[in-house]
Length: 260
Image (tube, rainbow, N blue to C red):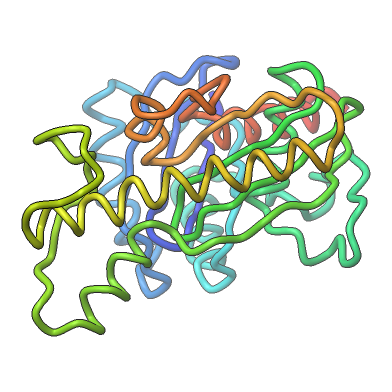
């Protein structure tokens, strides 16, 4: 059984795989100060509820965009699972694709893993949109080469900046405006919902249109991340909504190492 750990700036996702199928997944807030013992108290109890013993885990892989979190997760793997974890992007876990960008070493692990999974699961030229702390747009060509992309502020960051900078604006939830399809708000909260939600949709649609024009060939759009389903219900710009894309990429990488 594989334990895949996806460390983002906001959350860490732990997922148990049986083969390529996810048996269970759990999420915890990212905190680089959290010790291996603290992870273990939480994770082992959740595994017990799924009737999975630590000894059943014979492989662990970690992808992280928070370097400070890696040490304690490595200790967790070694102390409680008796495993030396694989780390995505570090030998022997090579990406296995061409990174056609100016600084290949600067490519984030999450974006590389998404590119691997998207190419494995979907054919042709691809645009991968990942909704996280930042919203990223990644271009993967039909051969699986990574061609570059875009980094934009995540919608929660945009909302935080708006509320923190304007004293009289209230905190609102990230959700589609529900009162009507009108984009002319009649009160402050409606106007904020419209600006934040439909403004973000318009940004995505506009950037994807520009990317497709620059690629010059048909390109499918794959959305992933926590808000992918929400936005997928309110735009037809996505060809696939795949919330497990990053975890599937980690499973593919772990499988490659096991087979080598």
